[in-house]
Length: 110
Image 1 (cartoon, rainbow, N blue to C red):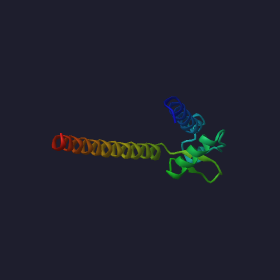
Image 2: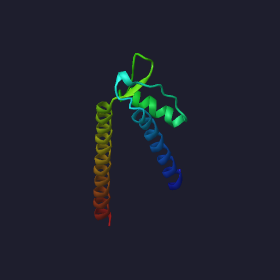
Image 3: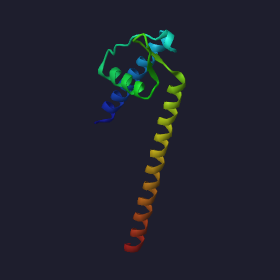
């Protein structure tokens, strides 16, 4: 995937996430008592709804609707950020090891 295509896909993904969260915020559906129905307008919105529901950030209510649990959303976002940082740290560590090995091999055979 080219850089422009990847950027467009990332932007579409972010918009879908914002639309799903924004739906519940704009309806003030932030507790079981104020739960509202949700219908995805796109495949990406459906995927984000499922992801956030699986994380507990969007919760079902007894009235058949859903609501946004901001505390669980914040906890899930923190977990995602922490996981991303761990991945970056590992990639950097492996890159340094590979660079050092290449340097040593170059010195030995150079």
